[in-house]
Length: 113
Length: 110
Image (cartoon, rainbow over all chains, first blue to last red):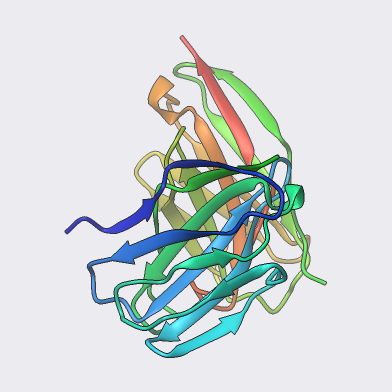
């Protein structure tokens, strides 16, 4: 198993540009989520999904869209990037159920100029 | 609201014990967790403790929980240079709904 994979590893955008951060898992996990990590702060939940076709907002959803058309993929879209979205983004997945550990991807470092 | 706080930095010598501390505010948390993040990598679950436990030991790791003071600590015995990383404390009612602390950067010098 490849686990949780994220692409790209690094990305630089200009303000107003759009892009999609990719996340995929091959563990047949129902639950997937996106976090952002900022200096001096813990990870904050952006959006999550409990299964294909179902998504919901986390703590900091503004400026981000998600979709879950398949179990494997959970892309995160920035429609109009802003400097405040400069961060490291982590995707995670787990089996459904509160006792199941989340597995994290290696992260995407995004800089918005 | 929920808040989880950690000191930002800890430096120890190889072979010493490291103690990383965390305070949290949500008394309804069911689980308290410790994650490790190595440079350029995602978070890796180290260990967790149920809120009805006081202590959990796992090889070199000891987790202590003081529910009255809402204080959680992670002790790493015989710290090695490979333990250098950022350690995150987190609380939640499940693995999916977590509130993370700010992270403590542990530096182990030879």
